[in-house]
Amino acid sequence: MPLKTPRNENFAKLTAGYLFPVINQKKKDYLAANPNASLISLGIGDTTHPLPAAVSDAMASYSKGLGSQEGYEGYDPKCESTLKEKIASVLYNGMIKPDEVFVSDGSKCDIGRLQLLFGTKATVAVQDPAYPVYVDSSVIMGRSGLNNPETKQYAGLTYMPCTPDNGFFPDISLAKDSDIIYFCNPNNPTGACATKPQLESLVNFAKEHGKVIIFDSAYSSFITDPACPKSIYEIEGAKEVAIETTSFSKLAGFTGVRLGWIVCPAELKFADGTPVKNDLGRIMSTLFNGASSVAQQGGIAALDNINQVMDIVKYYLENAKLVRETLDSCGIKYYGGDNAPYIFAHFPGRDSWDAFEEILTKCQVVTTPGFGFGPAGQGFVRISAFGQRENVVEACKRLANHFKK
Ligand code: PLP
Image (cartoon, rainbow, N blue to C red; front, top):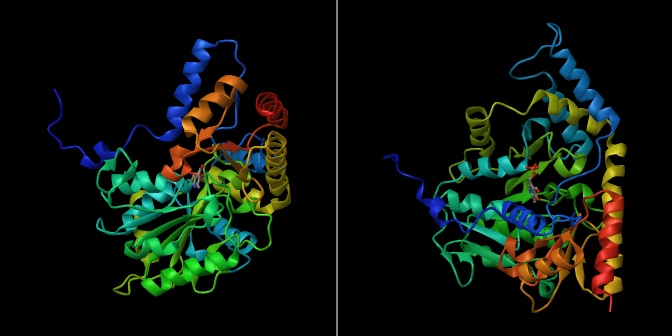
């Protein structure tokens, strides 16, 4: 007997499945048909390098303590305030205050929770292409109409194309009718990283028109170019318009451990004067009971050993360099891979899924079709630099064998 309880009708608007389960299915289908294939995945952006011993030891030792009366803690572990202080000092150099930091179980969950801050009528602008969660969570919240099968865009959402023609920095004025601007920097999937003047133009636009920016800096640790800010709060006035969501996932290999944070500055206020931070505090205390204390111990150890953590980021950036050199040798134009772990390879005039299939079947390398991140990703595939060196070297060899003329 089906339920009489009504479904959230917005789920019916979502197209296909979430991108990565679809890719996983294609991978499984290929392996079922080719059981001897040795696939290398440079598809999903998942970290592969072991944690520094200082980080895993800190989690192990705290976990062991939980088995004793003296070491046991329940809700509200003592470490949360230490972690907030370390985030504010080590990662923001004091630019933000510890009480503006909301510790969480990761940025994806936070992007979902942040949706609850704004009225259902609030409208949204996204970079196109972009991390799919901004669009999908907006659709689930009822901020969109139906998906147009021709344009593959949802009615009611504003897409700001990021292409080689605009250096992957969108025309922000397209967001003139949107209340919320999602901005992912460095960008997943394009690997583009905005300069200070570009981010100033974003902040100035938001200030002038009273819009909020949800700034996703999940990949900020990969920024090597000193001209590119790592946080939106490096831009004057950003505290009045921007919330930053970010994570230990790519910074410290915590994709499985789960730890992230939101920065919501005290200066950010709704039209009626209510500090946004108050409502966010309410969401976090009503719908979330805090990040795992074990994960938080790992986060503290990661920040105490930031040089070791950054050595792993550098390792992935060296992988990215190998991929870039391979694409250069094949004459394939690409973007990114210098301030981000993603390389956006261009196959002009091709369908992204087609290029994805060619790389899968001819090189046995899994990538991600750019189109899966939005219509402007058509003709691109995203290659991830997360992987063990020997796998990346082998994948590069296969790509060169197939594509080198
Ligand atoms: N934001 C971006 C741009 C991402 O690419 C990802 C994960 O790939 C996330 C957020 C989610 O990170 P987390 O593991 O903290 O949920």
